Length: 308
Image (cartoon, rainbow, N blue to C red; front, side, top):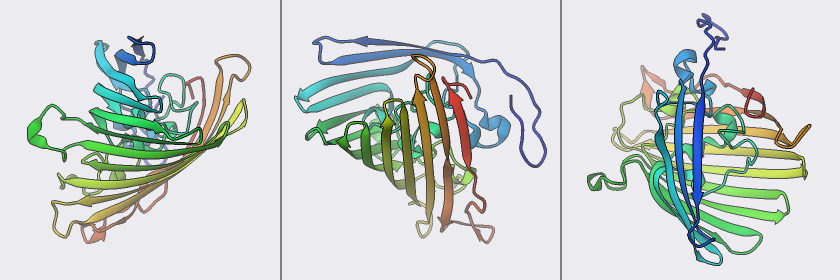
C-alpha cells in the first residue's frame, strides 16, 4: 500500500508483485565457485509513486516477468590467504567488500527497504570487473575491486559509470567487526536511496561527476541471537565539467538491530533507523541559492523475514 505523508496524499492502490531468483553455484576444484543467477520479477519502483527514493524497496525490479541473467561471477584462490573474483555480469561493490549488516543485507531475506540494507556508498558502482580479498591474519583483511557498466567499450576509458572500492576490516573478537571503506566513482553518485538532491547534486547538468566516499561500519553480536550494526557515510562529489568545478557534500548514518531465529529457525526480526543521504553543503548555485537539502529525513523500518 502506498500513501503520502504531508501535502496532498497520493492515490492509494494496493499492488501484488513478485520476484524469483534462481542461483546456481558450481565448483571445479572444490575451492573455487562459479555463480550463475537468473531472475524474473514485476515489482515497480515506488519512487515513481512516492516521489522519493527513500521509499524504495530493496527487492524491486521489473523485467515484466521475463527471465534475465542477473549475475555471472567466478571466485578462485590465488594463494592460501588471497582470493580473486572476476565478474562478467551483475557485479556490485559488495561482491568485493562485505557490508557489516549481515542479517539485513539480503534482498530476499533481509531488510525490505533499500536504505536499511547497507551504507549507500556501496551502491556507487556496478557492472563488470575484478577484485581481490587478502587475509593478513585472523584479525585483519583487505578487500579491493573495480566495476564498470561499460567495461566492453574501449572508447569510454575508466571515467564512465565506474566505481572502485577498498576496505579494511578488523575482527578483534568473535562476532565483533569494524571496517573502514573508501569508494571512488565516476558518474555513479546516484545510489537510489537518499534525497533527490543527493542522487543528483548538480541537477542533471554535469556529465563528469567524480566522487570520493568514506564509510565507517561496525557489527557487534551482543549474543549469538542479537546483533547490533551501525554505519556512517560521507561523500564528496565534484562536477569536473562545470565552471569552477563545484563540489557537493552528502552525509548518511544508520543503526540496525537484528534478532535471527526468533521463535524458530530461519525467522528474523529487524529494526533500522537512520538518515538517508542528504546534501549538507553544495557549491552549485541554483536560482541564487545553494542546491542543498534544507530538511532532514529519518528512516525507520521494522521488518521480519523480509516483510515490513
